[in-house]
Length: 454
Image (tube, rainbow, N blue to C red; front, side, top):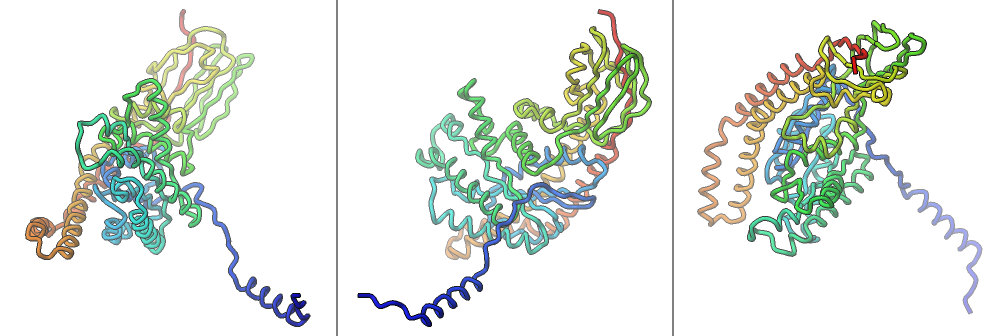
C-alpha cells in the first residue's frame, strides 16, 4: 500500500513547483507588422535574388510610392542579385543593405535556397538557419524586416519547355510545394518575431488557377521561375495589399438639388464649384496621382484590376437629368458618360487621356529608364561580387581545381573600382529620381461636366 505524503513534504513540493513556475518566463505573443509607417527621408531596401534583380516588381512599387506620396522623398534601394541565397545576402549585407540605413527591408529569398528539388530536410535547415542569421543582422542595423514568400514555381510551364535541364520529374512535380512550405515557415517566423509579411506565392498561384480555367496553357512565368511583367504586377499588388498602403487616390462626390450643388471629398481639395441643373464645374487639387504602370505591365493591371483595387480615383455626380454628358478636364474632353454612369461613379484612374493619368505615365516612364539603366548597372556590379565570393569558397573547398582557380582569377580582375562604379550608378539613379520629383507633384485641374446633344 502506497504511503501518504507527509504534510511538510507536500508543502515543500508545492513551494518548489510555484518557485519554478514563477522563474519560468511567460510566453508573450507579438503582433506582426500591420502597415508601414513612412516619413520623408526613410529608406526601403528590397533584398532578394534574380526575381528582385529583374527590377520589375520593385519598379512598380516605386511607381506607387512616387505617385501616392509625392511630397515624401523616400530612398528606394534594389538589393537583388541573380542566383542569390540567404548565404549570399549575408556576405554583401553590410555594404548593400546596412550602409543605406534602412527603416524597412523586404526579403525575397528561397527560390534558389530550395535547390530546385523536392523538400529536403537538410536543405531547409540550412535555409532557415541562414535566414534567421539574416533577420538578426537586419534587426541589429535598426531596420524592420518584411518577409515575403518565395514566388511560384510553375511546373506546367516547365513541362511545356523542351525536355532536359537539371530538374528531374520528381523535382518538377514537388518544387512548388517545397516553396509553399518555405513560405509557411516565413509567415510563422514573421508572426513570432513581430515582422512584416507578404504572401506572393498565394496570389500568383490563385491568378494562374483562375486563368487556366479559361486557357490551360496560361502562365505568368514562362521560364517557370522568373515571373514576367504581368506576374510582377501581381507581386506588387500583393505588397500594397499586405503592407496596409492606402488604396484611394481621391473620391469626389457632388449632388445637385434644385439647381444647387453640394460636395464632399476625400484626399483632395475642391474649390470654385459652380453650375446649374445640368452642368457642373469645379477645381480639384488632389493629394496624389493614380497608380499607372508601363505598357508591358498592362496585362497584369487587368488581371489585378489594379486601378479599382489599389488606385481608385472616383468622381460621382448625382442628381443630373437623364442624358449624355461631356466630361472635360482643363478644357479637354476626356470622356462622355450618361447621367446614370456619373451617378454610379466615373473611374478617373481608367481614363488614359486624363491629365492625372498622363502625369503618372510620365513618372512610370522615367522610373523605367532609371531601373533599366543605372539600377540594373548597380545590381550587375553586385552580381559580379557574388560570383567572386562564390568562387573563393569553391577554391577553398577544392584547392587543387585549376579550372576554378582560373575562373576566380578572371573575376578578380574585374573587381577593382567596384566601389566607384557603384557610386556612379547611384548618382545616375538619383539624377533620374530628381526628374521624377519635378513631374510627380499633383496639380490643380478644372473639371466641367455638361450635357451634350443626343
